[in-house]
Image 1 (cartoon, one colour):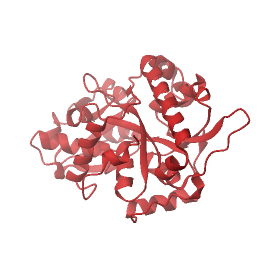
Image 2 (cartoon, rainbow, N blue to C red; image 1 turned 135 degrees about the horizontal axis):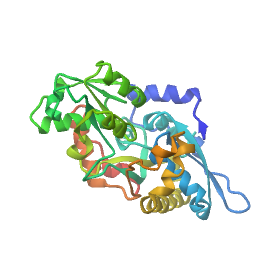
Image 3 (cartoon, rainbow, N blue to C red; image 1 turned 135 degrees about the vertical axis):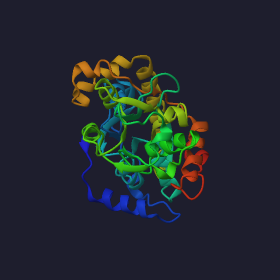
Length: 325
């Protein structure tokens, strides 16, 4: 995958974080992709280097995008928020990222559009991420996280937002939780050393920490918003307006790809040793999110309400206006 290294991303990201005007910075860079003599259109798709992203690679390998006359160049980003400026300026045509970042960007003036769903947290049973504490920590429920240090990969994102909501639901004070940012791969060591009291981790880190004798405190996504979308695909409003046929074909290809991924999760797992440099033994048993191209608008609406409730946005984001119909 081609890695994003251009300086424009950093500049635009800074603008996004500090707020921007009501207009979209999308420009002429989002012109229609050139089609070859065979009718193929070149598109770039940004993905995060996490296990569910391998579904896009599966769709490419299975010829689904080719069937829809799309030649995909995968680009890797550090996170959904980092890819938003690239999509906005047209440096990247589409990306896969968490919906909160997309809604936040739209709320701040970036003309983002959700094209399809992608993956959802599991509504019942064992979920694909959760909060873990040491067995002797005295932390039995989410309510006990008040006054404790909890590591998340990004502050003001879906991890800490849903943790706050579960703490509040259980009668605790969400404002008393001390959130710290740490990379997922460092959280286990920091928990073991006592530098944090609990960590929020996805698979495969979740299963690893529980196997080491730590205990699950909460499946926070599941308890706050069952079936919460963890990722969606998105593009800029400008690109969608200029390239309606490409966007429609991308939507069809992604929907078909995600249906295959949901029906054949082992096809996704088989790609993980190369895609994620993950040991085969771990990849073969990895619990995956639910894959679904349909956008879960009702749950995203509730996510938007939580964003306003906990001050991530000054008002509830326009979820319906962000989704391409």
